Length: 128
Ligand SMILES: [Cu+2]
Image 1 (tube, rainbow, N blue to C red):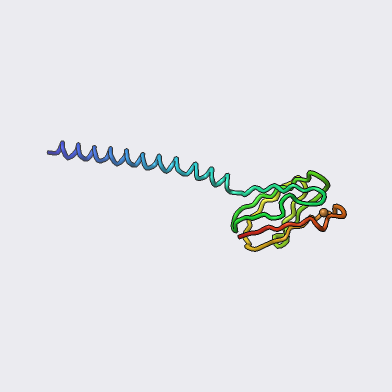
Image 2: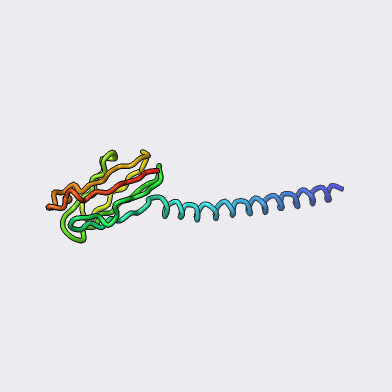
């Protein structure tokens, strides 16, 4: 009788350990793809190309709370972007990263006096 009880006890322990390991493995494997997705989707990368005298995108849409990474490429001339309301500035061939924590529409303008078309260089950052 005692032997049986012990055997059942051992079997139970083995089962528990085995299932415990299985559970642990699942825990170990599942966070890594999620972490990768988090890293990949962490910052929304936006590249704006500036030339005389326009930005190739005049509307950027992001979600509120999203981390946004804006890169400005000056393919022609010398321009920079200033985002009103967020007080963020990106100079040519540089990147600025910030969290879009305020919803609304924010105008961005060229903040370098680049020539006669300078005033036409504007766009909208839409945070929804
Ligand atoms: Cu300008």
